[in-house]
Amino acid sequence: MALEMRDRCERCEAALPQLSSARICSYECTFCVSCGDAMQDTCPNCGGELVARPRRAAAPAAG
Image 1 (cartoon, helix red, strand yellow):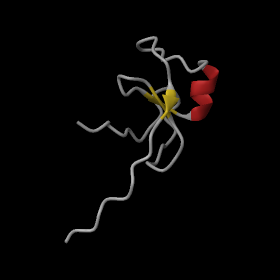
Image 2 (cartoon, rainbow, N blue to C red; image 1 turned 90 degrees about the vertical axis):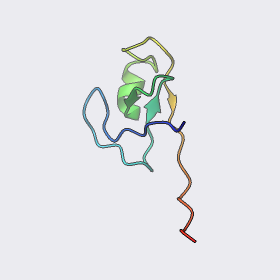
Image 3 (cartoon, helix red, strand yellow; image 1 turned 180 degrees about the vertical axis):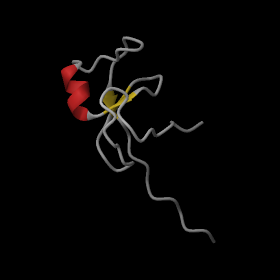
């Protein structure tokens, strides 16, 4: 099962393109880096740790 790569910060609604830096908790709550820093990397929804969101590799070409 893949992570849901959300495209907006849940706190300030800033756009988060897939290649941008973001913070995510284990429940996939997603925040921009600025909001993550302001919340001391603690998710306001679950209290879990916010960590750097992983980046996906480009999809392989259809063959």
